[in-house]
Amino acid sequence: MVEQPWDAVETASRIDSGEVSAREVVEESIRRIEKHDPALNVMVATRFEEALAEVDRGLPDGPLRGVPIVIKDLGADVAGLPSTKGSRLFAEGVAAQDSTVVARYRAAGMVVLGTTNSPELGKNASTEPVLHGPTRNPWSLDRSPGGSSGGSAAAVSAGLVPVAHGNDGGGSIRIPAAMCGLFGLKPSRGRVPSWPYPSALSAPVSVHHALTTTVRDSAVLLDVVAGHVPGDAYGAPTPPRSFAEHLEVKAPRLRIGWSTAVLGGVPVHPDCAAAVQRAAELCAELGHDVAEVTLNHDPALVMAASGTIMAVELVAAVERRLRELGRELRDDDLEPFTHGLLQHGRTITGAQTAEALRAAQEVGWQVGRLFADHDVLLLPTLAQPVPPLGLLDTTRPETLYEHGTTYSIFTSLFNVTGQPAMSVPFGTDTAGLPVGVQFAADLGEEGRLLQLAAQLEQAAPWPRNAPGYAQE
Image (cartoon, rainbow, N blue to C red; front, side, top):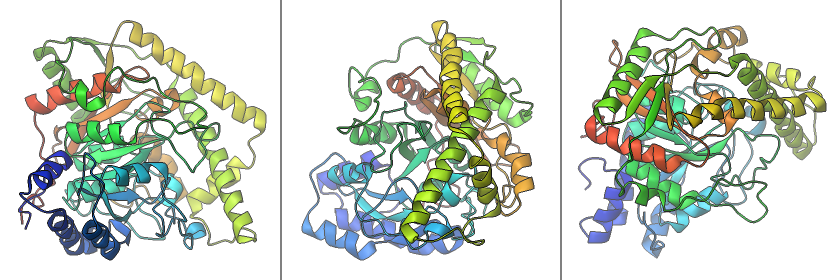
């Protein structure tokens, strides 16, 4: 029996050495899911018998052979499992085939145990869909785990699996990583293929990766899934070495610019600002050149461009689904907030969509100018601490409109620009809940971020799991 959760790299190493079998590892993950999921509400669908049968037949001899993983029920499909996207409109959908990211996980020897909860169509910074109910944060069951990869984040934080798939269109990896005390990297635009979901024009803000407890897991997983498929409309620059190999190279001295300035009128909570300042001080102690910086972009332009792109993508997704079903939209198909966003999206013209895409590129150039003088930017991941469940309730659009921007104002910037960004755990707030700090770099510089994160992980290690979940 596996005594406590290991990270994915350690798990694969112990399986390869014969210390533990892949079946024992998978069985332990299943046991932990069955024990904790009733309280956490992480899983949407499971495939435990199929997973064990795959293990018994023999797994591909990849770098993560035998490591269990769960997949976010949005933007990535697992053949034969429901593909509900957290929405009643899609509740009867079943995936016909694996998405590219899932196929690549399998080719690396990983064992897919099921899919995790997501807010309806990913349009929330908390995971509280009407279809499946709220996922709870392992650090405090009355708190949000973040969104939209909240189910995956809670699964990793509680040690149900070593790592979990997520994707990030406005902070959907970094927000739950910060709220659940995990490491979360959003790669560069075009780093990870989105097949079979087109993203060339309608959703250039979103990219796949994972929620992890360690930096090395994130690096290895990114090596597993990175790389275009034939026909991709764009791709990120190819790095000079693998992402895992970046961690074996001494990190260079970096020019780090930090800021806790108010963006878009959203105040930064003292606990969140203090974490950034502590991180800046630690970076200076590690030998980096650290200085406060003034952000030179228009936050309103970021939110407007992001909102337009998300709204028109929602219209396209809903209209395609209605064509599949051969019917009109019903009153109970969508949550009130999603329905309002859909109605707004239907008023947006093609010219306005093109203008939003142009604005996104302009913001990228504005932020890009900062990288002439700085290698890395350091900002809050969240402007406010982990919220209680219900604060971001999509059945009350007025509440979500009031509070939603608070939890994405710092993260959505780098979805619009396409630049890589990561949330690094950096202590707890005065309530004892996790706080994350965000680092961003220029396009294609994930290796630089991972090197810095590994330094921080060594200098200021964070707990791998929420209190009470590491050992049982």
